Amino acid sequence: MNDRARNPIAPPAASVLSHLRRTEEMAAARDSIGNFEAQHCARRWDASLYRPVADEMLHAEFPQWRDTIAWPEGKRFAACLSHDVDCVQLDSRYELARTIALHFRHAGDVGKKLKHLGSVVGLRKAPRKFDVFTPWVEAEQRLGFRSTFFFFPTRVRERHIIDNVYRWDDRTTYRDETCTVREIARDLRRRGWDIGLHGSYLSPLSYEMLAEQKEDVEKAVGETIVASRQHNLHFDAARTPALLEKAGLLVDSTLGSNRDIGFRAGTSYPFRMWDAAARDWLRLVEIPLVLHDGALLRPDNLDLEVESAFAVCKTVIDRVAETRGVVTLLWHPDKAALPDWFALYTRLLEYIHQQNGWGASARDIHEWWASGGMGARHHALVEKLAEAAR
Ligand SMILES: [Zn+2]
Image 1 (cartoon, rainbow, N blue to C red):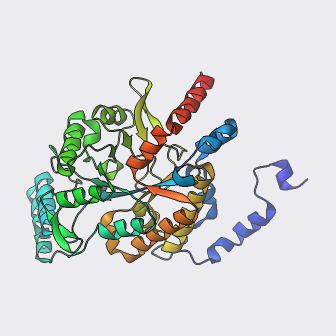
Image 2 (cartoon, rainbow, N blue to C red; image 1 turned 90 degrees about the vertical axis):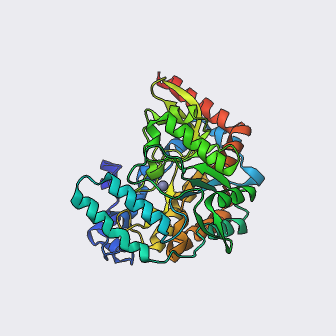
Image 3 (cartoon, protein in one colour; image 1 turned 135 degrees about the vertical axis):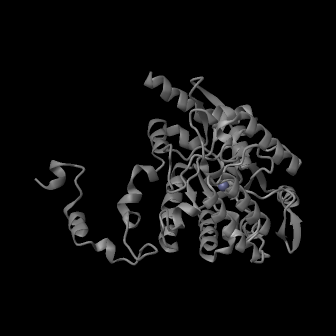
């Protein structure tokens, strides 16, 4: 009797030998300090966190479900493309001065206050005339894709030390001109891109903050907004969903990780959020966040080099294509200045296009999912599961 006959989950002998001989490590992938880490092991990406396991289960339980999924123009799956606007100008004097003031206000003792005043030397740096918006728009437009830009409100009643500090009236480089942030948001919307709310760090716990921040973005854009993602993905699963719904938002895309990629809830499908207090499903829909620039590339996160990151993202996209779900990508606008980070995004857009995926904003995906009846059919399956679990 061989190992697998005795224990079906034991790895085959060949793979045991390969692990002992450390064959995998002979490949080139390393982190930024030259180490082979857990994120370079193929077995990490086989784990269930990186698979839409709930979607796979729905396919197995309800085989007819897959055939009822339809995306526009015969596309096989969707990619929700998104950008959290955390700053609007590289080396901005406005933003640095406000950040220093914010840190100064929050610093407890005089020593710490003086330390923050030391950062004032940064104000001597000239702001860079770099357009952080247009490269994304052009890359998406080339393939007929659109995305959501989540903007941070100017009206924030209690600003946390890690909140953003730009304002609607700040001016920055956009399409070879100098425009206010308000003008940029309006122009993006006019050209078919979606604008969402990037709620402040403390807003997920306060209806008042969410409502006034939504209104603030709407006033700036001149139109109702439907989508939100919380800054730093700060969220309270027990309370925030009901507050977002009460504030009038229709779709959220915060369910992801700052430090990792994958499927937090095991699903790539948009789904109705659970209100833990009312013990009921809300109308508010979650489009889970799956792939994230900082999680993949930052040295304090997965710290993958670009080729490994691309390979891992392809694997995840293939899994979503298989279940015909939605793979959400988040790339921060200011990262247009980092060639590797930006190139990874454009390669992924091309891969999604080759695989017959639909690159769209959170607003468009939500609208398609709701109006095509897929949302209702998906929720009926969730209700069936709940019934079976009773
Ligand atoms: Zn943010």
